Image (cartoon, rainbow, N blue to C red; front, side, top):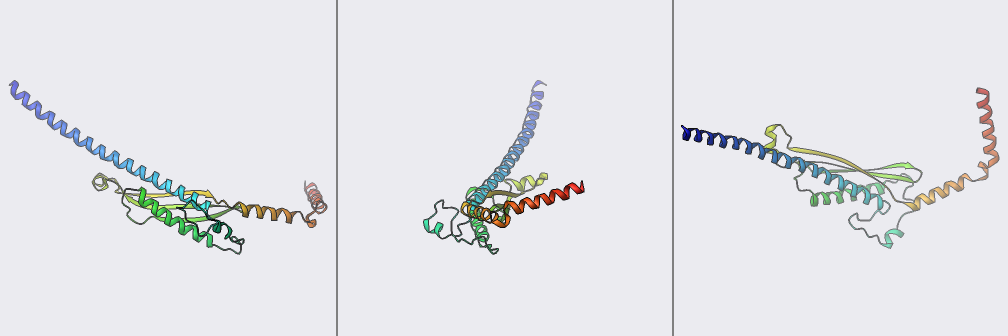
Length: 212
């Protein structure tokens, strides 16, 4: 009887161990998939930040390379004085092309999960105020989740969708200084002198007092 009971207990331990091992292995793969998705999201965000920073720093240099941090003298002297006039969007198109090429190269080198479709890179330049603008880089892509095919049987998605946006201020100090200096000189003309401004202020104050 003791021998028979001992054999039965050994079978129960084996069965319980098998169940525990199965659950442990599933949780292990689940945690690996979760951390892989988070790590991939961090990679995409980092690449978007780098792309926006480099594109903004070299925005006025149309023929610059985002992967090369060095700028030649010819590139600086070749900057057009009328680069923001007449609604010219050539700099924005160049920034979009350079951002796409740089981010694609970085994504291929730093991400280890397989892309379902080619990531999309959108670049927008928005005016903030006088002679100041910032650039927004949005990266959208879909990547497979490690062990996603096995986890899909348990209701988990095997494809992770990423969409991240990074912003950076375009550094064009020469244009900013020239524009502010030009605006300051125009506002200091005699037609906008203190006498005319004082008369307008008195008239507005009189109208305000009457309405009150």
